[in-house]
Structures are given as C-alpha cells and as structure tokens.
Length: 311
Image (cartoon, rainbow, N blue to C red; front, side, top):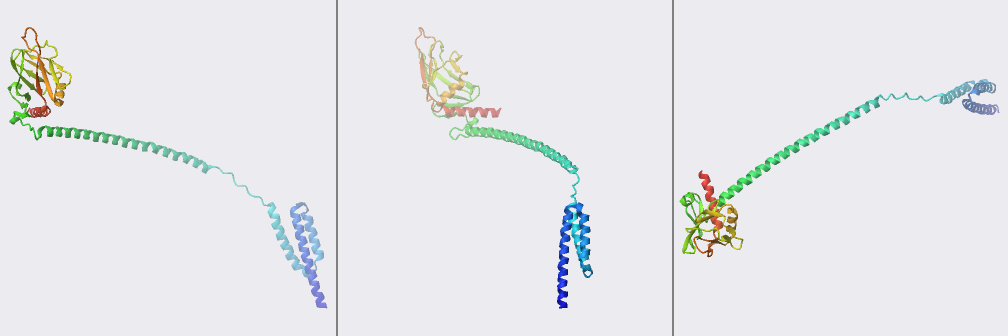
C-alpha cells in the first residue's frame, strides 16, 4: 500500500508540475503581448511555483523555469527585432551604365558611314571597271567589223580585187579599172552604148567613182529640156544636177541617193536633150541594166580601200 501511495503521489506531483509549466507558458505568452504586465506575471508565477512545488521536485522546476525562460526569450526577441532597411543605393553603377551605352551607340553609328563609304568606293570601282569593259567591247566590235569588212571586200570568191590584176570584169556590163580617164583612180565603167541625139547617134559612157556618177557623150547637151535626168525603175526621176562640161552631166550632191537606188534597182533610164536642134523637138533616152551593180559597187569600194593602203 505504501508503494502504491508513493507511486500515486509521484504521478500527482508530475501532473501538478506539468500544469504549472503550462500555466507559466500561457502567462509568458500573455506577457509578450502586453509588456506592462510582464513583471507582475513573472513575480506571480515565481510565487506560485515556490508555494506549490515541494523540495523534492526543485531540480525539475529549475529546468522548467530555464525552458520557459528560453521560450520567453525567443518569443520576446521576435517582436523586438527590427528589419534593417537597406542603405540607399548611390546609383554609381547606373551612372556608369548610362555613360557606357551612349559610347556603344556612338561606335555603332561611327561604323555605319565607314561601311557606306566602302560600299560607295566599291560601287565606283565597279562602275569604272564596267565602263572599261564596255569600252574594250566597243573597240573589239569595231575591230571585228573592220575585219569582216576587209574579208567581205578582199576575199570575195566571185570578184576578188587585186590592183595588179585590173581591169576586172564584173558581170556582162561593168568593169573595174584604174586608167587615165579616171586619173589612175578606181572607177566603174559601163559597157559602150549609143543613143540618138536628133541628128544621128552619139556614144554614152557611164563612169562611177567613189564620190560622183558621170555620164559622158560626144554631143552638146541642152539642159533646158524638161523631164531630163536619170530614172531608176518606177522611182521619181533625179533631174540633171549640173553640166560637167558641154558633153557630160554629173551627180555629186545626190551621189549616195543615186547609188543606193541603183544597188536595189533593175533598170536605169537616162533621158537627155541635145543642141543644136532647131526648132526644139524632143528628148532621147537610153536604158542601162543594173543586175550586177551591187557587186560592182562593192568591188569599187574594195579597190578604194586598197588604194588607201598604198598611200
């Protein structure tokens, strides 16, 4: 019985101790909320602990008090602790960044003109090179044209011109020669023909040089007759340009137009009036075939080029 009573007393004492600790914790928390009552609560707590606890339980009460004190200190420190506000930022780094950014922009901006200038220089070089190439191409084309002209003139298999082998017969009507009648210059002449002059027949000579067309007769030519001149096919008549002498007429101002017509024409008609024929009667005409004139005129220009080379 005595052991049982002693055991029961120990349990009671333990329960009382736990209640005391719990009450002290509650009071401490209340004191942390209301600091003005902190000292009164602590003193009351101490007196309660001193009265209620026996001497045998003193070591445990001290540990409880220490635990409660530590808890109190923890609970008290939390509201007292103040968060430290950070020091104001001086902004030196920001200033440095702001200072560096414009520098970067300036460097980028400064690079753009340099790239532009390089591109501009490259463009100029490309233009100069292109012009040089075009110039060379033009020169090459001119040279090739000259070469083709020489080949076509000098190497015609049908009518090959050689100054040492003149005169050269071209077709049945034209002859290329260099004689006294043309002052030793290249000239084309038509075969000998005759025409009526009102009193009989007079020979007609056709001589074509590099700058004029000449029609020669042995009768006096009268330019007062109307509708006299040279007609190619159905084209309008080319009137007599002027008298070369009393027996001849020439075309010099209209040379190129006349030659161009003759190169594509089939027939030329020469119409003349003669003097003396009193009273005035009529004009007379003669027909000239132009079938081989284009080849003959080409041979004439080849002969002229060869003469230039001799000079």
